Length: 487
Image: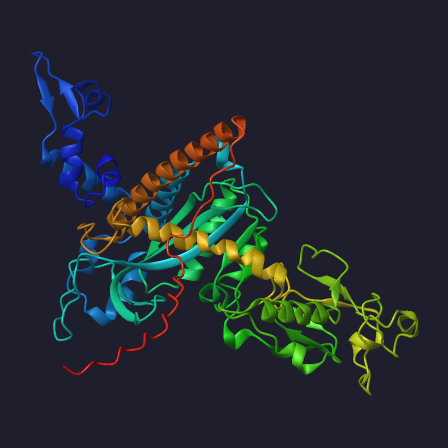
């Protein structure tokens, strides 16, 4: 960890040099040095240190390297699944997860463990030091657990590409809605081959965290997670008590069928007489003006009047009841005589359906858990409340940025020259531990400085944007040329 905190490559030789540079008392406490019977000091050699690391990794390796000798590149995924079957592999996988979870959770101080229940999740590419074999080469790569994945670049001018390695995922703690500011500490880490669905891997990681005592509140995820099948992501997280705040994939936005006559839109049920232009509302673009934001929020507020609101919490089986918006007093509808007494400020249904569906014939209907299971979330999409709550998800991107910063961690290809899932996972988790310690120290130092300035009556420091938009300099009026005087 000392080598990682210094921003050096994650290599065993660097770790050995750091241990050798410690004081003799620290070396004794870590069993790196010992006193022999003759009274001499014996320090562990590099070979002993590397062998100890290998023995520890073999004990928690669910897919040992020998099982992939002679395996062709195209058959690696099938052999990876076979290598992880059986009681021994399951115990090794569970032990690996336990070690990683304990390492990361130990870096979170007790004062911040219950500070927030909201987690922002995301994944990124983690290239291995190994290179893939050529297509005509039947031998596996030096890193047999790695495989090809897709790296999406959101930076301007950057193009998407393939990489050879793993998907690294983090679950970063963020402030609860209307809650106090908390340090953005990583609570869980997942590192797996791209051959496995990262959404399923993260869902299993969070479910395991909840079983170990970590309370799940808001889980903020982008459309890379929400677009997956609900049985792999949304369903297990809801069963664990999580409340999803997600961005919807363009294919999941807008009307997605009906249930009992109500229109399924963006994870909610709406009146069949909802104006079509409201059902087609999408998220705001990044460069939206203040007028566009106000108009968009007003349209979302009008759309909320047509929503069938929940009147009961989901039962143990996931069923809940919703009420007609006219019966709830949100819109005026001639099919509900009592609603016509509402003021004219409420939207009016001008063209009710001729043959009444069940959502119009009854005041309430029962909704099974399968309806909108993939897109249902805490806030109406894409309302202002959802936009403000979802903005907290950028904490996971800041976490990846700090881990890849060359001045701090510098995680990139060649940073870790160890092969195999277990070794890469262990070293990546240690880098996250170092990052958490640094974040806690910075957060507490900033809070102490704010308290000191408040005691002295000085205003708190304001954070400034690193990259401010530069306004173009005003153009100077052209100067008139002086007429040339002939000789």
